[in-house]
Amino acid sequence: MRVIGIIAEFNPFHNGHEYLIRKAREAVNDPRAIVMPVMSGFFTQRGLPAICPPVVRARQALLCGADVVLELPFSFSCAPSSRFAEGAVSELISSGVVTDIAFGVDTDEPELLKALSSLDLEENESFNVKLNEYISTGISFPKARASAIKDLAKENGITGDLDPILSSPNSILAMDYLIALKKLDKKNRINVIMIRREGDPFGSSAVKSNMPSASSIRRIITKTKSTGYSRSAIAKGLNGLMPDYSLGAMLSSNSGDIFSFPDYTCYIRDCMNTATASSSLENISYMSDDLAGYIRNMANDVRPGTIPDEDHDLKAFEEKISTKRYTLTRIERALACMITGQDKSYLDIKRPPYIRVLGFNNEGKYCLKIMGKCADIPIITRPSDCLELQSDNNELKRIFELDMRAASIGWRIYGKDTASEWEAKPVIVK
Image 1 (spheres, rainbow, N blue to C red):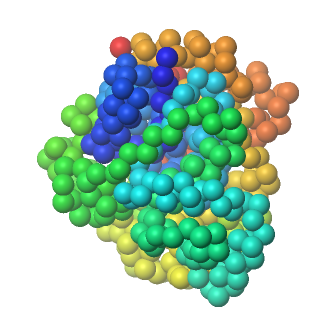
Image 2: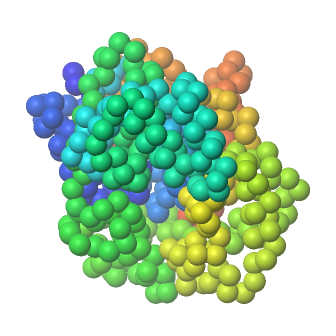
């Protein structure tokens, strides 16, 4: 049995995701191969709440080609690319059944990605020295890391046009997936499938093809806020840009009162209020390098118009708060850690301590039976499962409690009871 692991956010599930699943099955020449995505939960890697709750995004994926959907815990999903990648790869390998891992790339030179991933950045003293030197000049961490990688690549005789790779978030993630696989799959049992990304560029706000970026899809949704997130306007704007089943699942869940689309402006305002009320931000994850003081000063200076009502995609907020030193993504990620209570000690937990199943179909049900015998870590299908496990595992207890805090905040943002996650059960698609 071939089981293809995919790392994704499905924020929301669009045509590019369906293409990735189809191409992954074609790559292993098995149309019946099990596809098992591990997906971020209530908060995404960039630090904002997802446009739909996990239960909706899991249903979208299952209706459009996936067989089992897993959730990546908050501490790993809302994290820099290296932690995000290692957490996701670790969870897939820990399932005990994954034979392949597939992901999209933004380059026609996958071998160059493999070469860069072989540099062993984590243990390379020269790289760490160069990284700190670049950071000390005042540039952002992503740019400092890219510059340090380029220097190290040159020292190791790796040639080629590195700039497009090191400036692309998708390619950086792909490189970190390969680094994580090298670290965790020492016997090279996992087959790697790199699929060239098609359609509009990552992060593009304009729709130029029938494979738009997730950013442009979210922008179309949030533009309808002034009309109360008109479902007819969203359906018209997204027709052809998402699989019909995916669009239908999202809109029916919204009309069925399963969730309301998030108000990002209100969310950021709440974060600013929390920052002003916090006695200490310095111990929060990713608040190093004086970011805590910067955020507190920004929060204290919020005035009418600082975060306008119509700033649905937070462009005005980005212009006011981001700098060369502090990117918007890092700030939003730090704010998410602040409101969920993730301090720096959580970053000492290097691997997800459990596998959370968000949903499955009939083929996935069979796969889960095998996982139950092969998995290296506990498998849970609902939050109450963790209550029986956490007394003997402190890391599991802490990550679970953090996930539940993130879920509580997430459900409030989606307009539902903050305790809704306790009643959550896997989505089953037949």
